[in-house]
Length: 214
Image (tube, rainbow, N blue to C red):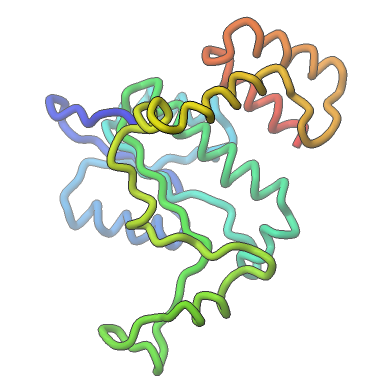
């Protein structure tokens, strides 16, 4: 995560303006008197997101976009490729582009939102582990509370500490580009060339090619 630049006047960009979370964030930004713009690009389109970041030059990006599914989140279980493009590759695009430009980036994501009812009024009894089990995805995992997901240090420091084995896994896997399914020979050759020459510099292109063959 990029450090916050306190010398530059704040300018915010919201990605995911049409969603439920996006609507609430627009309200909060407006009430807070923040200078903000609403992105129009889809996160899967790396070039479009990059162009908007370069045009508006925000200091902070709020990414509240994501494929929630219709009629509910269970759709993502049966449409994994579509969910992957938006919720994984799209989120990676935004995070990577913000990191390149030194922009502070926040990702909002949730798998299940509870609604208040007669048994759970606002300010009343909270939800229990049993409630979580009843409302979780079939065969899936229950989301971890946000306060348990916060990192007390940067991602780079976290990787350089006791998780150096993850860096080794990434380095060893750079040339193994067909973990899940076959990739056409021409695309595979291009991927191998990009990965072996300058993996970090070519990451955007690698994501785009990989996305096309998910």
